[in-house]
Image (cartoon, rainbow, N blue to C red; front, top):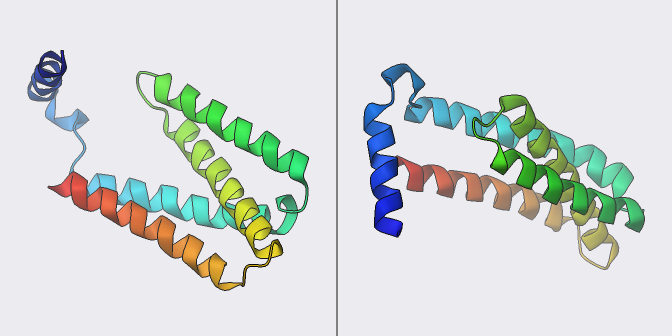
Length: 129
């Protein structure tokens, strides 16, 4: 089953027009844009959403729902993906505020940003190979 799916993906990549394929610089720019949106959206999440547990849970459910919705769409819409990145940034900021409030220090903020950046760079490195 997996070999059949892999063969279908390879066939689709070979038959796709050249202008529809994403080159590595396009992927890097797109990833940087999504990462920037997530980090910028983490600031209001940290300031306003970390103290209200009900909003935090609602945000978690919204992130899961939007993530499933974006993943199920055949051509992924850039606007929906940017919205998902913004929701993910809000959740990251709210979680960081909650973790700092539970006795953590402010180094968690830098660690959250660095961890998100390292994850994105790791995915790009795997994609480039």
